[in-house]
Amino acid sequence: MSSQNIPVSDPPSSTTTNALRAYISRLTESTRRAFTRRRPWYELVDRTAFSKPESLTDATSRIRKNYNYFRVNYITLLTGVLAFSLLSHPFSLLTIVSLLAAWLFLYLFRSPDQPVVIGGRTFSDREVLGILLVLTVFVVFLTSVGSLLMSATLIGLGIICVHGAFRDPEDLFLDDQEIAGTGLFSSFSGAATSAAVADVMARV
Image (cartoon, rainbow, N blue to C red; front, side):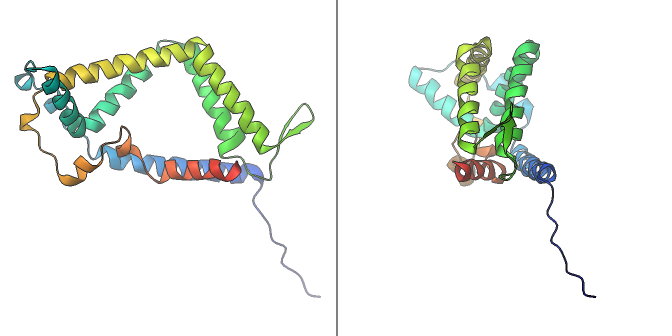
């Protein structure tokens, strides 16, 4: 009596977990590579390198040069300000974490053959995406969470601009590859972000 091999597929929950683990792994590797370009913090706070800019043009030029050199440090500083603000407001932190979890488990890493069923009604991918977008807009623009994030971002950017304007960049040297990467989060871009964007576009 012959037996046939029956293909066995992973359950939807296992597929979602594997996708999430793969994404976290790619994100961790991308972040690790970015932090290899972080400058020593003592260069950032070297008091002997601070001086008043001669003009607004000089201040703008200093900010641009310092940003290209201290890009990873500045992004780390901005992230720290945002994290401190959220930790100081537990409700806002819980709201952001819940919103992020909803995006991850209901849309980004949910298996296509695992529908979202609420109250006996099955929602399509487009409907789930629409609900999440509306929820995100509501949280960011119509609650205190949005104002908190905006305030923290402005404070972080203000600190960065003040530092960049008064930190004399004459002793800083950049190679051609570092000069080319001028995007705000270019140091942290990689396979993780590309994979997430591609998955979203494939579902739309």
